Image (cartoon, rainbow, N blue to C red; front, side, top):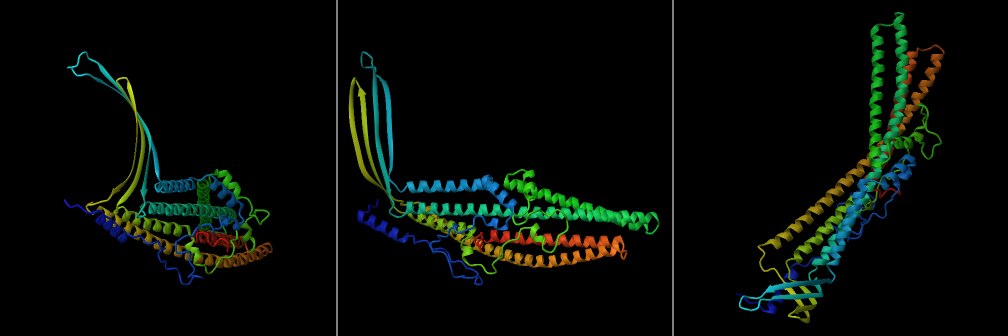
Length: 490
């Protein structure tokens, strides 16, 4: 047996402590895009970025009452948000438990017992001995956090609470973006239904004319068959379009919690800057902005703080910080632990008709240290270090994905802006052609077939213009979602 002196034990403890010193956490270096404005600007090195600078009502810049109403309804009662809030509460409770472990603990214990025993056979006469006992008293304990085990545990819990808060912000952002996307899709779908109805009416007119001409022998039966096929295809496309509209309504019902009738009623309301919704299928060169929300201008270059303020990146960075703190916990678990303990107990004993009372107390310290654990302590440290490396890799992956999503959203918005211009030009030209051919038809210069061909070209141009306007607004919504809404005030 090897007996170590107190000095040797103290020296060993100090050496272990020096080997396990946990440096302060520093946010991992992130490769921000050099092309972004102020790419060198960053949040403090302790990673104290927060989502408090986000525009929490960014969707109101679209001036769409349906989007406003459905998002408000979803925020009031949505299972996804309720889950996110519950995860925040759970993380906050975990932090409270870890913080409480740093404080002295007090407990109260009490006991009472009544016992009986029979006399041995050699005693005469026989008798039964009844004994009553009771004790009560408080006890106190306090672990001296010499190596920061409890402190690092609390730090890890605090970081994860920040991560869950960022996750909740991300959930709110995603929910609002999904509803905005759905409303924009439904508006465009409803307008497309009107255009398809006009196309079917044109096909009906063409088929009726074709049948009249067939009756007098001016066309072949195949011409009537082609016109009938075109009419059937137009009706088929209309049915498919109606299904898409219904599916979009169902998705908005699931997201907002409103019923289908309520969703449809909100989407049929005019935009905030228009007086009346479009009641016909005729769209002028500027009327398209009254049918679909017009997003505010976008920023061609975004500041780097957009990335560092993104809820997903904040959550990933907080997870990395928590994993770093857990390395300190794993290291501290290999070091000696000192617990201070104190106890005060009052005891009462009654037997043979007599009673006695005793008061006892004790104060001391308890030292425990691992001597041989088969390498489990070192393995726990290596596992904590590996989890930290995983968290850092996840953070960098999240950053790259966020950069890609923002760049894609910017490209989509620029493309949509250009397509809005060209589609409106095409709509204006088709509208001019339709008006001119209507005049020519009334003058007998062209046939009704040529007029209907022109009308269908105009319908197609209108549908392309509506789709471009929808894509423009949805691209802006995607940019708000991709950037974490940090650019929502731009």
